[in-house]
Length: 352
Ligand SMILES: C[S@@+](CC[C@H](N)C(=O)[O-])C[C@H]1O[C@@H](n2cnc3c(N)ncnc32)[C@H](O)[C@@H]1O
Image (cartoon, rainbow, N blue to C red; front, side):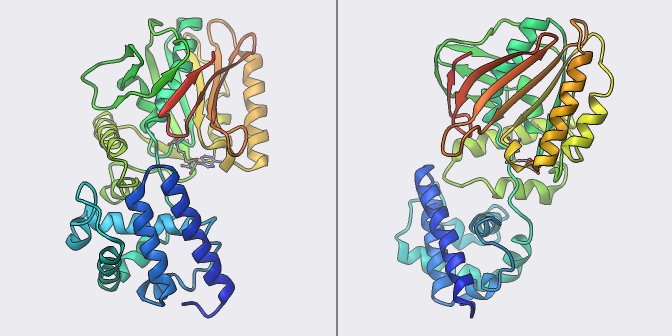
């Protein structure tokens, strides 16, 4: 273990917190794996050598999720068959067996793990499209124009393809039933305007750290950060990756402010420009939040019925509560709270 007890305590604390989250979010295998990892660390084994001198804040750096991602990557690439043999869908081993296997994997693959955990976890949750869908439909119904999609914090850009997914919303549905991504959130409340005419004229996104899904290593990372307990989420992630590769979706490397400044500089006649984002606003600096908000306000002043502007966001409003879908549409500037949804879009309460 690291000589500095404060660092060791911080690392252990990060693992304990993450284990609780995994238990809460129905990921019992990932919780057991991280419990085993914490014991490995505490016993001064190989993991203590790998992360004992972690230079940053283990909790803020999501160190346990970096370790979990590295282990998942070893399994996904077929590099650690003994670990794969106890991963879901196999029966969960008892904690002592898992610990023994983990210790052996850590000893064999320390260098790979060391390299893998250098980068922060980066995810792209396709389920959030189900929360955003109603907003896009409201915009299409109100403007009757093709949509020009601009997503900030788009990660791999998978939610730029929301119109190519299939959605089951209670007894209703939307989209192509043969789509490679099928979303069936638990739906409460009335429905958005499902018959609104949806045409996408253009789709483009930005991210500070975009994931290029054409690159096999980046694709592996995206899949490795998914908790292996969540098999349905993994299925739709794989469907979305395949679709995005076929469609050639790209996300440019850019700060949201620079991207929004460029994209909203001039109104685009004959399309409804939709600036949208999901679960990214809290990562943006106060300065950039203010800059983006001012740029949207400026562009809103130039919006017309022939070139309207929408700002659709699925974001946390208050810590400890579910994120909210809000929509503002110009001209007019009508601000509407549309839905409250769980962070991955598994349950959606439509309040619009
Ligand atoms: C939690 S992820 C969400 C990704 C995606 N929107 C989703 O819902 O799956 C937050 C994303 O925002 C990006 N991000 C954070 N600050 C940003 C900024 N100022 N400009 C652009 N992207 C940013 C991060 O790189 C990350 O990909």
